[in-house]
Amino acid sequence: MSDTSLTSRLAAVSRAALLVGFLALVSLATVPMTAAAQTGTGQSAADDTATGSPSNSTTGPTLWLFREGDVSSTAMSEFRRGLAEALPDVESQHLLDRSAFKKHLENQNAPVPPCMKGLEPCGSPQAAAFGAAGLENLVRLRLESTGEGVQATYKLMDRRGRVARDGTVRAQSPRQLGFAVVRAIFDATGSVSITTTPSGATVLVDGENMGTTPLDTRLAVGTHNYTIELQGYRTVEGGVEVTSSGSEPIRHELEAMQGTLIVEGAPEGARVFIDDTEVGPASKELPIAPGNHTLKVTAKNYEPLQTTVSVEAGQTVTKTAALQRVNPLLQSVDADQIANNKYFFRLSYDQSIHRTTFRDARGETGGTTYEFLGFANDNGDLPNELQKRTVGPPGLRFDVGYTGRNFGIVALSLSYHGVAQDRRVILDSSPTDGGTQIGRITQMHRLHLRPLQLKGRLIFNNFVPTAEIGTGIAFQWVEAEFQEQGNTRELTLNQTEAYWTMGAGLEYYFSPNWFAMFRYSFQDYFNAGRGVEHMLSFGFGGAFANVFGIEPEPPEEL
Image (cartoon, one colour):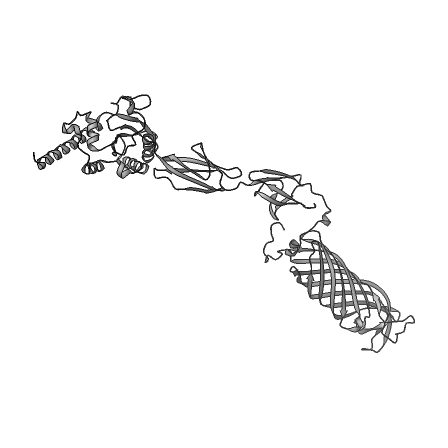
C-alpha cells in the first residue's frame, strides 16, 4: 500500500474515531441522572480509583453539559457567568458550551486510539470517547428552581466514563450557584489578603479564626463573611467574594473605641471639662478619647476641681469630685467671661467734698435780682478777701457705657447731690437798686452731666482696676433767705460751671454679669474760684454681652 493510501486510511480512521467519541459523549449526556450507582458519600463505588477528587491531570479539558430544567435562559446565563468567574483557566481547561466543544474537536490532534486501529482490544465506549475527544472529565448539570432560590444536581465523570463525584447544591441566585458548584466539585480556592492599621487584629471568616493581621490565606471560591476584632477598637464586619483568581486586598483602618468617664459626688449642675473643652454635665456618662487628659469640674458657688485622668479604649473610669463650697460673693470669675460682657451700667452713692464759693450765683425774688457776693464773717461784714467754705453734698450717680477688654467709653454719666446748709452770706442787689442784704444759705443742689468719658481697665480674674478721664458740667441751685422790713424773703440762686474730671477705681465681679465698685475722682472747675471737688463713690453694676442685639452671642458657657 502506498504511503499516500496509508495516510488517507489513517485520517479516515481518525475522523471515524472522533465521530464515535462525540456520539458516545452525547449518549452519556442523555443517560438519566440517577443511572449511576452511588455510595452514601455521593461518590461512585465502582472501584477505588473512581473515588476522591477529580483528576488534576492536564491531559485534557473538562466538558460541561447542561440541562436547564425549569429555569429561564436568563438564569442559565447568570449561572454560566458564575462558573466562568469561579473556574481557573476557563478558556483552556473548561468547555462551557457546545461551540467551545466543537472548536476543541476541530483543533484536536490526539492520536487515534490503538484499539481503533485493531492493534489492541477496546475498552468501554465511554473510555474510547474520552480518549478520542481528548477530554479529562465531563460534568453533567441539571438546574431547577426552588422556593428559596435555585439548585443544581451534578455528576462528575472521569475519563473512563465512571462517576467520580455527584451531589446537589443550592444557592439564592444563579451566579452564587455557579460558585457553589465549582467549590463542591473541584474544591476551588482563591487568595485573600487582609491588613489593618494597627496590625495584630484577629480575623474570623465565616465564624472560624483564621489568624491575625496582616493575613494572607486562601478561601474557597464564593462569598464569605469576615469579622476583624482588636481589643480597644471597634469590630469591623464585611463580606468578600473570592474567585479562583483571588480577591481585592482588604484594608481597614480600625477606629479606636472611646472610653467612658463617670464623675461622682459632684454638686447638682456641675459641668465637666476635658482639656479645657466642655464635654457635658457631671450627671451623665461622658465619652472620652483614650489617653491622658486634664479633668476639670466646675459648679456655681463651688471651688473648681482640676486633676488628671487616664483612660484606655473601651474602659470606664470613675472619678470622685467632692467640690468645696465657697461664698458666692468670692467665687472666681474667668477674665475672658468678663471681657465678653461689653455693655455696662453702674449705680453708686457719691460723697463729695468741695471747698468752694457760690460767687456769681444769681437769683430773683419780688422782681429784684440778687447776686451772691461771698460768705459773711462773724460780724456780718464782707471780708476783704474772697472766702471759701467746705461743703459735702452726698448723692447718687448713674453711668452707662461700652468697653472692650481694656478700653472703652462712658457714654453718659449723670449724678445729683444735695445738702442742707446754714451759712451767713452777703447778697447784692446792686444790678437793680444798689443795695446789699445779709442772709443765709439753707440748701444747695447740684446736677452733674458728664456727656463723654474715656475708660481704661485691666482684668485680673474677679478684680478689675479702672481709670477714667473726661469733662462735665455742674448745674447748681442754692436756696437762700433774708429779712426785709420784718418779712422773710426766699430766693434761689443758680449757676453753671464746666470742669474736667479724672478718677480711678476698682470693680470686683461676683459673676460675669454683676460687680461691686469703688471709685475716687476729682473735678477741677475751669473757674479758678470754684476750686477742686473730690468725690468718693460706692455702688454696684451690671455687664452684658448683647443688650442691643448687635453683638455676637457669647459662648454657651457664659
